[in-house]
Structure formats: structure tokens, C-alpha cells
Length: 127
Image: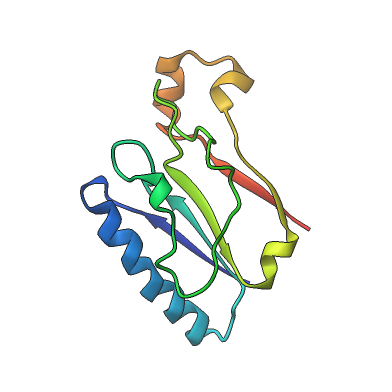
């Protein structure tokens, strides 16, 4: 399978997300691989993007590995800025998408957590 990592600018979320369809198609065609995982800070929630708009601008059905209510930001706001999107048959082998809340797990204060990152790492299992 192929993986695409991305950080979308908060200033142009909708436009950059829609442009990802071209990136997805290029990866799929270039490597002749329909199993693709696209992940990263998509800024796809809260004030940057209406998450209910979804990701239906892709040519293929999208499987959201992270539950839509997953909090991926260290900030007080509960937002799913980070996403894991999957395409192709690989979706049958992906499970348990979640954010690793290292602040809670390691007993960090908010200040200590922000010194590490303003986002929680996201993870999934590949069976």
C-alpha cells in the first residue's frame, strides 16, 4: 500500500483538501496501487472546516479510520484536525484508529504537552 502524509494550511483548508484528490489519483496511477492511506494534520474540523461536509470530493469511497469525534489537539478545543483516510481494499485491514493522548498518559501539564506538540499523534492497526 501507499501512504501520503500531509499538513494542510488553516488558511485554505477546503481548497487544499479538494486538491488532495489529484494527489491521491497520481499516487494510485503512478504506483498502480489502489490501496492508499492519506494521513496528517488536515485541519479538517472546528473553525477551519465543516466536518459534516465530509470528504466526498474524492473519486473513490473514503474510509475514515479515526472516529469523527476523536480529539487530536492538545488545546482545550475538542477538534479532529488530524485524519487518517483510507482507500481501496486495505480498509478491511485497518482498525482501532485513535489519537495517543500523551499528555494524559505521561502526566504532562498543558504547558509540557505543548512543548512536545500541539497535536496528539494518531495511530491505527494494520492487520
